[in-house]
Image 1 (cartoon, rainbow, N blue to C red):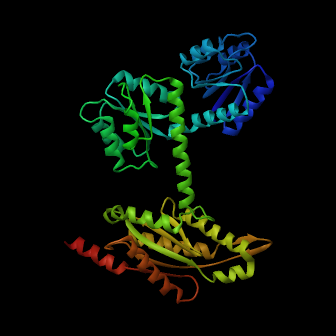
Image 2: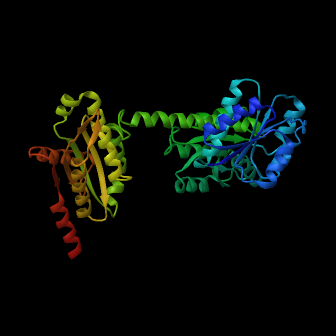
Image 3: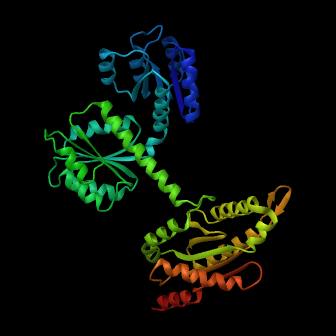
Length: 428
């Protein structure tokens, strides 16, 4: 656990911040005075972040802030008083943020800041500006908030970096650059990266009123006018990241099966179509499989809706555990799908057969009863199909063959043809 240092003389406020820090996932240490901070930091310095009260009984005018910063601890300043002098002073310091202790909204904002400091490293940001000093300034501000940062001096190099690092979720670009302007860069990026996948913020120091509209009309999410205030920069960045996370959450909800943690039919088919070329050209072997729970109606008749749902959830868990990191879906009702991969087709076939046996041996405890079930599975060896649609058609046909038989059955078509093709390639 990352460590949070809470410096606050008001014990009630300190207790609230401690609770917020704990709920965000921190191990919290509290100090109530500047003297306690000095004694604490003399022994311990591995704090990930600190909340620092501006006024302490023995440090009324913010003297504790530079002391904590000198120990390389990122700091969020909490203050109960604010005027122009204090505001200017705080903006000149390399702090994470400042929060005025006015109402409950301030503490909700603090939770966002603390949570963001734990998770922002997962978000990569690309800064594009031909001015070295401007790039360095952007990067310092972003790293202060714990983002992973890349920077490039022009549009062409920015496109290469974007291609190399798909984890980049935010791009900040200047307008006036040699070779490719910021607006041209935005236009090029939007051909491949929609707004739901990548946030773009344009910026410019030119005093033209139309620059912001020009950027946004060409696909940017927001605009910053240089020079900008640190506060405005962070507000715009965090708002954009929050919107991106919200969109990702909506998309994840839309793509997921309502009962199990697997993809739903629509999202899975979309993924298979998108991945089709990579799968066909990949050196790995693949079997696309569709599986169905045998006698599923009887499970509902014997155990009701709750028992039926439990079987579906358990099967999804077994799939995730057995076919680790491989595409899985609940297609509908009691039908699931998997794109299983391995070095050899025989290896995948053995794994699939092993899975069906594992399912038939699995016992589920339900209301002092034990539920057992089995599956039938139809698959096709992925080789020369012209579309992912053919995977489904061929696997469904194989499943129908398996279901005509009794008990747990596995039918995988196309293995002989694949072996023959591989033999011909080997002889050639």
